[in-house]
Image 1 (tube, one colour):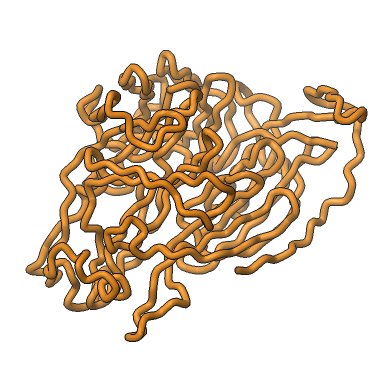
Image 2 (tube, one colour; image 1 turned 180 degrees about the vertical axis):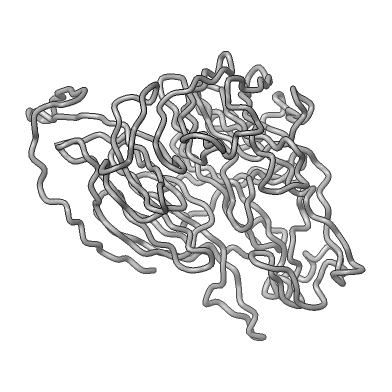
Length: 458
């Protein structure tokens, strides 16, 4: 375990005259001034800026001499309204980043910088932003086979520390496979995370030979590419593509043993883009957890004549199931909602919670076969009613270039960054009850990376 104390450069901040919405709260007899401001992360000419804006519903903002200039970020995480974290993936290397706060002058200031192990998924847990990836550990068997583990970072939002720990990812689900996490949800006093099985390492095969369902799944040579590179003598893809697993943690770290909830009615719950795993589990306003599966197991193709080994091909399509608040099993009464049987019958790519039991879904318009393309359709799913409505009011598909990774929900609406092939990107405000989008704030930039709110507290 490693714990680094990091430099916190902000000196004491002095209260200035109120220039935007403010309120005074009594705290142990002392007046605390709390003021909120919307913050946008946007990029132009390869440089990222963090301007503050007064409204997300209208207006046009230029980045020229406006807002803190920062390095690029792969992920932007708002920890409450006090901190904004910028996380950099760095491909297979170690991650880097910084956190930011709102100063008394209404401008964003850098709070601290930090380094951490590589990242494939992230979220918040208590006072920490947490990141996780799966990779080699220092544990080896007698043959020198290396065990796989979770490389977890706890990035403190309060005392400026990074705690790095490694946890065993081998045989995590008692099926012999090593796994990774995808997304983190805090609800009902617990942490929920989707567990994605990854196949069997040499270490896992040696330790649990009885968990190999078919010797034909073991590789006879090296192959693959990028994050899919594999060596000889492993099972490089899961034997359980049509299963979903949710781990429930009740404490404050991954040191404890979780409760595992599983089903064979949907595939693993995670969006995918190369080695990145996108969150597709979200809690409704009442604490019920909705588990969305894109059905990515169908993208696995077994071609033993070329590869020299077989793979298990998934069959299940996109679906959603539910775990009731505080329950430790899937809700059998709710069953499975087949997303691809609703509206335009398109597969799920990823999703976000809006409000109550409304969720925003990003869909594939050209099917799962064309990865990273055709993800320009949005829909609103209402959990209890099991209904899906395609969002209207967005730019036409022939000019809609991309949908932002970090929508922002507030007051029952969700604001989604939209980039088109003509003009500047803008935020679109979506009403979940009507599934209608209205163009809001425009940013003179190439892309809008994130939007949220920071509050200055004296």
